[in-house]
Length: 233
Image (tube, rainbow, N blue to C red; front, side, top):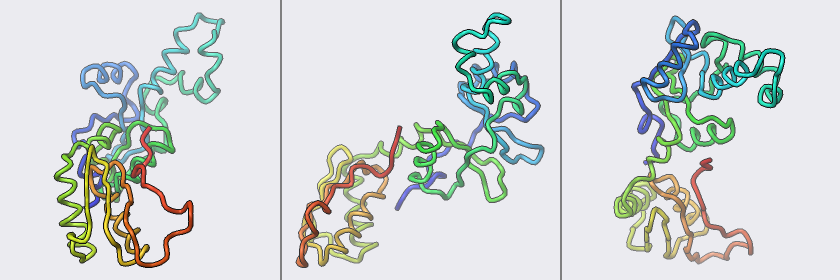
């Protein structure tokens, strides 16, 4: 079964409100050892995120001598300079927040982190209320699984249960999370279906397709190994 955000998210989240001061946030960073805060409105809905990067922009600008913007401040974009003058979470936050739901796949969460260049995502329910947070380390934790567990799920769940096929028709080898699949598939399309099912098994790093097919082989250059399930920065 493909893992979802709720399987790995952290439910104990340190959050702030729009009025939380810069000083209070710096204290919370040290005390709770976090690197960002979801910002909530009075109803508990996520309206933004304040990260260490947002707060460092203020520190970089404020540390320059008055009237001498210096190299660091000079490189800050205008929006960052305006943000750096803020004194509360509402001033410093990035809004709207990039969020995911508990039932979203880890693949979707990883793509959002990769494309939006963020290190963590608040997890919200259907009403936009905060229920957790997921970071890069949480996504990578899904790969911490034994090769034997992965192989057993592929044989019992993917091939036997999901695809209603006898696992004895295939050879499945797993080493360091990399799956090598061999055997005879009924058609090339069915072979692709098996590979796609395997690549969504928790802990699978890559799938090497070594299947043979009774129908005409794919055109040269169209056969490939699934190198990774999703991009991770």
